[in-house]
Image (cartoon, rainbow, N blue to C red; front, side):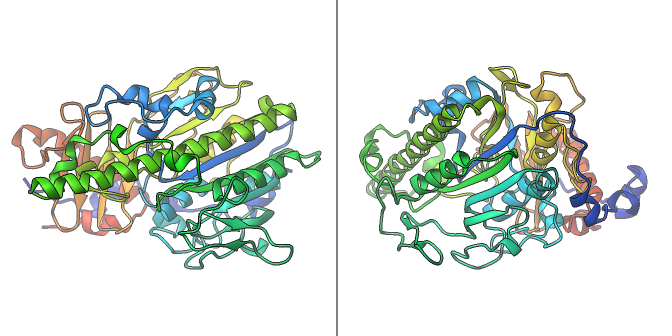
Length: 481
């Protein structure tokens, strides 16, 4: 079955999309018109990790144990779990692009990758983008950032200067990219990073070091509310971590995905060797996650000691997931669900009831508006996402349960819904998965005539969306066969 041919003009006419809908407010107005303050604003702390899959957090794994691909809880993460138990957990939160740079750009601007400019790794974000840091800074917030940024092009580590920090005033410990396991602060100049094979101790291991910088920032005396992001570059590879975490989990206790055999060698000996390597990587990955959870606990303790825990909105999330052997794959940016469906947890007892569960499909581009809506601060107006703060408050709001995917190649586009995933590719190798009947995504139903109506409906939604947001993919999606 081939896609129906749609023209760009016919879609613009049918769905009322014109050039006016793509017009953006002036940059200056976005940064200089603060919301009139009626009451004290909360602090905002975003704890951002790198390549963290839902199965690696016990609060999410409890839901996934029913899926054969996972089987059991591997890591107990009590501190991260507590954020969900005392706040809200999103069970269907998706990144719009399952690779570092574009995902981070979506989160920080509320705009799709092609719109904020950093549509693939190691491309700098448009310099005229308005970040949530810009908006909060203009509303009287003290802003800061520590850890991996990955939105400033190719520099590595690329320690970020205030002129390029995009609204994060305290950027002394903000670096562009890299996954070092040891960082040492210097009396003068930038911190010193070690080769990847060198692993630090509880003071210099990167996750611990960044937690220390976060704690230092929180402890500073201040009269203003703060917005701080700590961006931990783990559990992204290399899969090494300081002791005792390196040996905390045993390879023989690790689960093997059912789909791992899809791309494994035919011979028993080769398959066994590959499985041993995967189990070893997975055990170390679990150690990395446990170290992150430990440091989340340290940060929470400081907020409690300062008596500002309940005055602080805490967000825990990541940029994308890790396949860890599923379909014989490692890493991300393929088309299977694990890299796209990621953790997202928010705690703020003043507005969010403990134990709130959100099953609506929410994505990275919705975060900026959602957090600002929760705080009572006007967004910029350039955002392309929606405000889900009503969901956090327990209100019933109109919401489309779909997650639009923008691949970094610009040659693929897709959609996740509660029932299906459709992937359209410029080369014609399209994919359709029935997520309810085939949760491990082993059967491509694209050419199955029984799914013709479903396919047609989903294809229309993907094409319409890409035209509405003026995506580069619209050019080949609307091209006649």
